[in-house]
Length: 256
Ligand SMILES: C[S@@+](CC[C@H](N)C(=O)[O-])C[C@H]1O[C@@H](n2cnc3c(N)ncnc32)[C@H](O)[C@@H]1O
Image (cartoon, rainbow, N blue to C red; front, side, top):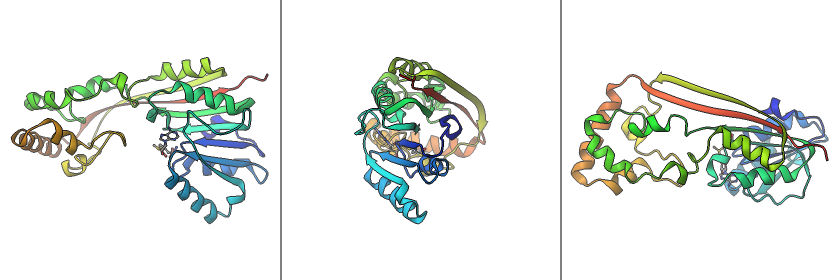
């Protein structure tokens, strides 16, 4: 991402959805003594964590902290040289306005560098299973749970693919757009080592945990049957199929 951003000494870099500053602090190394990084997020707690790290690095004078949503940036037009955003647009139901904002705040010649997972890849296979697990022997229960799942178009993590991101960038006015798409299909040990871990998982801060989901969809007996099956299946299968895709997008705002 930082390579795609082509950061130069003296640049002003805006990292949108900075989290605890993985990309922002990386960018700080490239802007030199005369540049600065704007750490931006919707979470004040995460901005506080970035402030703490900036102090620890004795770099606070080159850092700014901005509470803002990616689709509504309180920054003047053409005020930053580089904008970065990593794994953030997936949380926006509507991604297009974020591209418009990123284009607006970049100066002509400014660079945009994005990384996003493309979760819709493999979603069909995902829906056949339950969090990667083969549920065909308890399909009657799995079907009840899935009936409550949002359709991909209604879910921010699933309502877009790589072509949408490319189109949003182009329609916002970026030129010289390059996208690198990576898809992987592999067999791996399940990332959740046990059902007790998996049941506390939520795919999105706005989604229920799996435990809450089962509570809402199955009665006590059904839940006991489904949970017992999942617990055993997780222990039984050394490897589960994984399908993952992601993109790196680099775009330049044309010179006026
Ligand atoms: C998966 S984390 C990525 C953090 C960081 N970019 C990284 O790569 O380590 C997603 C971040 O996006 C932030 N976020 C969620 N919705 C947002 C929005 N509408 N605008 C800006 N940031 C948002 C969250 O607070 C969180 O810090």
